[in-house]
Image 1 (tube, rainbow, N blue to C red):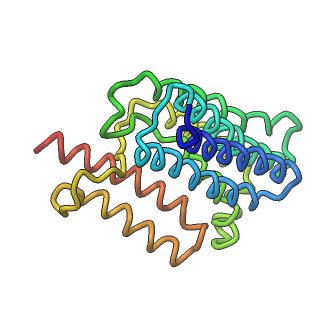
Image 2 (tube, rainbow, N blue to C red; image 1 turned 45 degrees about the horizontal axis):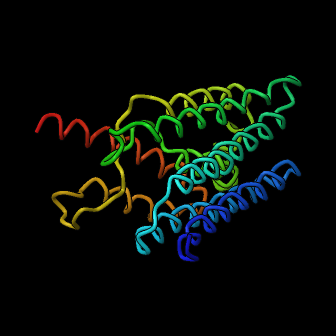
Length: 231
């Protein structure tokens, strides 16, 4: 293999490294750093595929490495964020382990993605990076909106949220893939809407706006599916 063939895999390894460092900080109680490292990892996750396309280098090892890195960064790391959030409620000693449900569902989601030929133009189920971004920025949302912060300290709300997000990962739910074949408003109305809402949420609430962005992404995907179905 030439040097350029190793570049995408090196970027994937940086994704994995960011995930592992993020896990360390979360277990130390620094939940906000978990979000920072998920964002850093998401950049590397984008770059490895982008660079592979630019350099025209693809390999089965790279594909498998990408999934393994994503499992750690976008599956295990958000699991431990929920683990620590549930632990902070101090309800039952064993309660935090329910947060690990996200890691299991993420593994199933990534395994399905690798063999599901339907997921070329759209995703089936909530993508693991989107789920990880939502979970990791919940503490920021709690700081930005005190009322939401009270919900996030409620163990039953956190348990329900964990169950819903875990099931969304493997649900037979068609969701938009933010891939543009062209940039016409007619063909990309819902994609542009997701981007516009995302920018507004970030401007208003900073990183705390990301959960609203992911919720808008899900709802707009469902709406787009109804429009296409009835067209």
